[in-house]
Length: 304
Image (cartoon, rainbow, N blue to C red; front, side, top):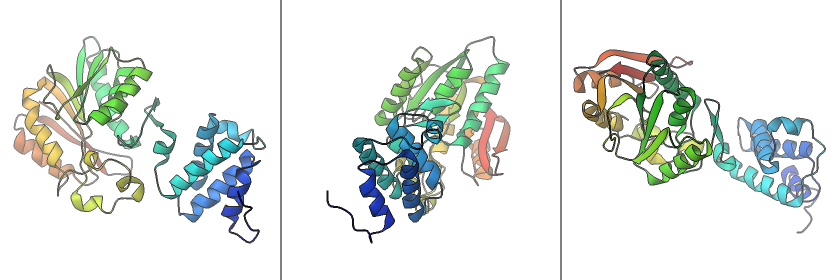
């Protein structure tokens, strides 16, 4: 490799040095600088997470080992991942990891990256499981993706049996990996299904984080999302309601009497989704809108 000129941009100089005897501290600083130049708002955190992943350590380990020297292979791997992050590839895909409801999940571009606001759905399901703690509760997680919701519910509510459904075989492969990692195959049944069509028994609870982004809004999403996450798991027609509408039509044939339905929705879709529920499901009761910590519409719940 040729030596980088002294008058080259500092990042290029650091790249050359990292391939030889870079220490943890300078490597983090160099990665942070490069990410800041690319206008990554979480530059330092991202650099730390990426380096910890490369070294196979916790992020906290880095702070106590700033003088630890990277091997040439580690330096090259770190630089490769930083460059991919500069192109706005999500950190969760770079490190194949995302925490959700305290559970470590494997993720890759076959599935959406679980978001913190989706934990609100888990809270609703766990509350229902607590009410019915003395009996088996059948829960259908529709559009399971990585299996995040199903695994969080199964881990925290031992009286539940989960059916994790997704139309995507690729997504189910990721979910299967997570189910096996957490030894929950006896509690979580994975099914390839168009929404609820393949559900083998009526569910006491249906929870769904379906596509709800409008066609127009999709074009305005951050590049981290629209350039990398699966569009089919995000976009649901011109109003963002196509998937939710189809699910509502299926519910009467797949939900037990008195069953609870928990839907994640877009930040401004509360009124529209409630109107759909009342139009398609006249028997629905206790229809409620729940807002997230930022005050945005986030979850609609109701009973059948």
